[in-house]
Length: 262
Length: 356
Ligand SMILES: Nc1ncnc2c1ncn2[C@@H]1O[C@H](COP(=O)(O)OP(=O)(O)OP(=O)(O)O)[C@@H](O)[C@H]1O
Ligand SMILES: [Mg+2]
Image (cartoon, rainbow over all chains, first blue to last red; front, side, top):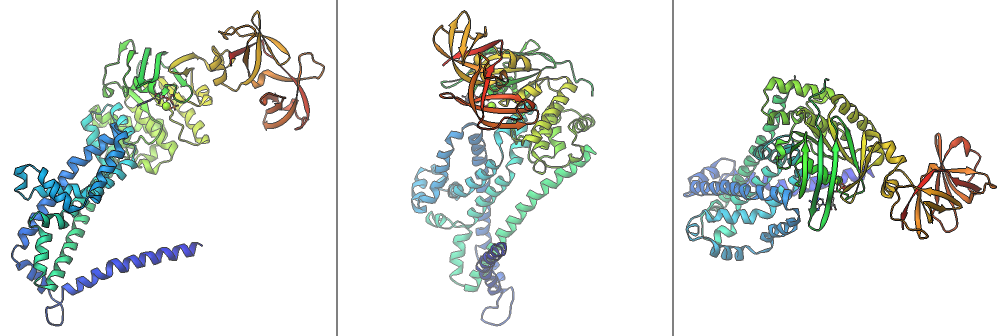
């Protein structure tokens, strides 16, 4: 029984690994091939860097992604905290609203939402930030919700307040640290989605890294693969960075703690 | 440790609070003397938590006053009240160690570091968790977590200590152990304490006085023994301790007829009319076994017998009545067996009755 379960798990991991990593490894290998010849080199990557518009497109996407992440946090963290503290009965409504972006086709979202945007935003690429936050909502909401549900935030706040802390101190020292995993997760999701979003951007005729990629890829198949490997590496890099930042905070606490008590 | 500060008097005067159409508190009056531990006991929904939260400032009263040392506290903000609160569970800050949790209230008071360190160490000692100071809450057992919560609440040297069912998430053995620890610490510090529970054994064991609440009001507040032996209302009689409810009739002149006996009615039983059927409340230990030829005896069939050390609980079945519970000395009922016909009678100077 136990062995059967173990080998089933092992098989699942193996299968998932194969499906997930094999194509990635293959793509990575492919991206280093010399065009038209044998052997490996960085040719495709240097081609990538030389392409017109590569850096500006990447810059635009990074800028939009950072703003999306920020807007997402500004919008969602207070909403979720207030929802769980003061208005739990409205949770099912918010739950539903936050799933809507998955149900509504991106095309209707693009057209409908564009019309409702204020004029001055319609004329800049920053309108995309708002759309990205909306499209990411189903994921960012879940990430925050699961982190908040894991702690009893109401009790924590009441404990903090009754111990004499102000609201501001309670938010900084109790609420945010308690749901940090959710904040980081939601930040990463909105960032990643903004970096990779194609359909909406293309429909609204903006140029970002993904739309630039599609155009560039048409000329050079090996270059296109190099681009996708590059994007993936970028995502992994961002994920690791966030992970490191999250981990470091904890160690600092421990040190401070030892100094204080011993 | 020496007493922390001159203990405070806590007073609630005519406090009311409604949520929509639900009346949670309906004119609650309560005084807790300096250094006293009062337990609030009552059925679910009777307003215990609401009362405690109003004292803590986490809830506001619709009307009435809250006084600490005769100073009105109604409009004092939660974080200015200096009250220590211990919650049911999961109230420790998960991102902070045990020591940081205890330190939290001190930091909020902007105490300097050496003082804080000293106080944290003192509190860790008090709850006997010195070796766990660098642990995080999730690395502690439920009992240890509640001890940290207590230390955290006491660290700020509160005027009043408030506990809302602090033991209900713990299993039975740990529960009674921590209960004794809380009581020992409370006595040591001489801190005025309000302890909410729906567990009567807990209330009786820990408190100087127990306040029994019903529907947003205090029915009776007194020492545990008085509550048990001289309940002021039928509600208290049936809520505190076990009671058989037997059909009875009022026979006039303050007497009540129950089974084959006539016994005087407790003066606390009010609103009862002669001749009408009522319900008599009789404690299991107020019934004793007797002989068949006793005039007052009632016969029944022994249907259950559980041995609890010095005490044995008997269950007796009678036609048309619920099972009657009797508590007897084990040595007196050794020879009885289930299925035996037994004779018993009520031995009480007066009994309490209520309308059915
Ligand atoms: N925030 C609230 N909103 C609406 N109704 C409430 C609220 N808090 C309490 N109530 C109602 O007020 C009444 C008293 O509640 P309270 O929590 O004080 O009871 P309790 O005696 O602590 O009960 P328990 O033993 O179950 O904890 C209940 O009927 C409850 O439903
Ligand atoms: Mg309660």
